[in-house]
Image (cartoon, one colour):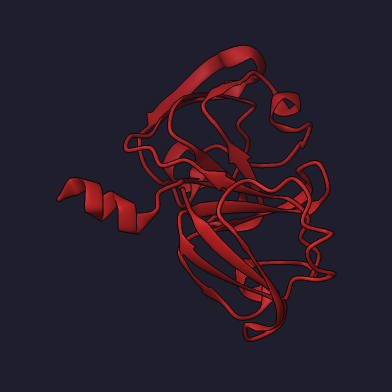
Length: 181
């Protein structure tokens, strides 16, 4: 699936913990998280227990400081590995309950306002793949992991009433290239 190494101190220093799958509670493993190395896979980290609080999406790479993954502090509790999927499709609606079909999307969208002239999306139907919804354009701001399924309203995606600025497909670029060869 994947491999992630979490370090207590910046620059990959201090006590570390290696994880290769979902971990619902990292608190017994370390007191803080200041740097991360993602060796493989895509991961979502959560600020609070039970997959609550701020979410942080990480792809393969080195993150020597929590601010490099847009972390607000050094608190990381659960982590979730995201399964690889080769295709991504989503239907976007401007009203709750799938009212007012806006469009279908099969790839990343860096600015919802520019592409669809909308500030808000109220319901989503995730047909294939896993996606990260960002509060602001250009993949900035609050992040929310969306798995395949129905999101009839804000409440279905965690009760978070936020604007959708951009959407990104969850793809581990290494595995995508490997499977295409």
